[in-house]
Image (cartoon, rainbow, N blue to C red):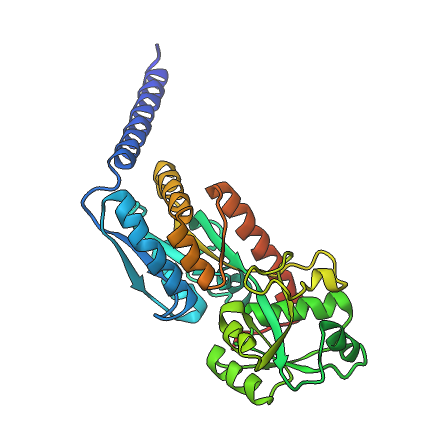
Length: 329
């Protein structure tokens, strides 16, 4: 054997040994997981919101199942991208995960300077659930049905609608509806759900679109009238309210959603194990009922199914942002 071939043989052998050592270390890490180190769920929005609530509903269930401490760390800001970035750029050791909201799929189009690649730097672990957005109006409004809204929106003098902010799911959903249905709406962005509901209840904005969790107390008290929900199926929380899809816009589906993500290089065995544990937690009636109280319908599925769903959401909303020249607040 020539010296060149011998050197090449040794290099290949060394590379194979290094690869096996890496795989062995990864496998050992996955088998030992979780160890004595606490598991951290980074809720990428401040305390009190739905992301925070989802994380705090999951944490005790996972802690009981895994026999390991599970803590919630709120890292809000920049529509969830600050907390998500800390996870994407953090250690992929299976002890830090992000709990994200539907803004995760919108941020790549709205925030071009994200310090991470949404698709490449994060691995979906599980889709926790989806929820409807509801279009509502003041109880004394002339809009009695969704059809009444469409009728005015076709005149070219469309009604104003409020959302929790520019680039929010409610804003994008109405923009998608307007473009697909050739309807005219005027967007009024608010700084969050509180100000939006205050003006909707006072009749200062004709229409408001927000989560079922945000609007339902006012719908139940008859101060707001629900006109339509944005999901493909009716909401279990508002079963008498029609969907946009069944109101003449077949295929329309704009769900809010919540998911758990890991750094991309997290060992797949750990991702699969946590997915199994999350699915087991979601099957617990106590957990499912608490999420339902937030307007969330649980979704049981694999990491691969979560990735397919999230990738589809990224594609859908990137097109809406571009087509409508939507800018972040």
